[in-house]
Image 1 (cartoon, one colour):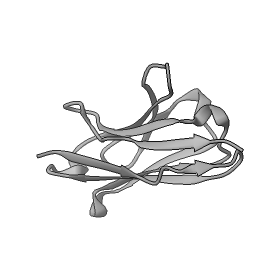
Image 2: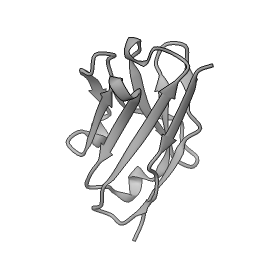
Image 3: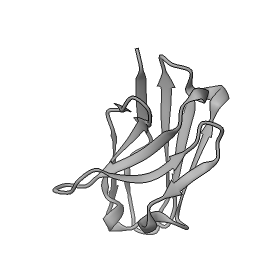
Image 4: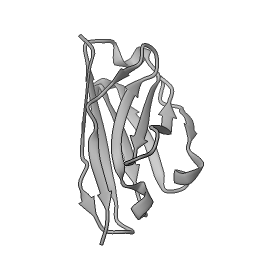
Length: 114
C-alpha cells in the first residue's frame, strides 16, 4: 500500500534551517508528481511547494520563495524540503502528498521560536 513518511521536523530558532524528508513506498515514486503542504493551528492546509516526477520544480508558495527549496531523489524514493531563514510564521505541521490519488503522510511538526 502507499506509504509516505515524513521526518526532520524540530524546534528551531528564527533564522535557522531544517531539512524535511519524505520517504515513499508502495508505488513507483518516479512516476508521480509530489508536494509539500503545511497546516498551522487554526488555518487551512496550504501548498508550500510542488515538484514534477522528473525533478523539475513546479511551484512555490509566495511566502516561501527564495527561502525554501524542494527536491527529490528518485533512486531513494525520497523527497526533500530544505527550509532556510525560517520565520515564526513557518510554524506548522508539514505534510508530503502524492499529487495523484491524494495520498498524505502523517506529518512532521516544525516550530520556529526563540
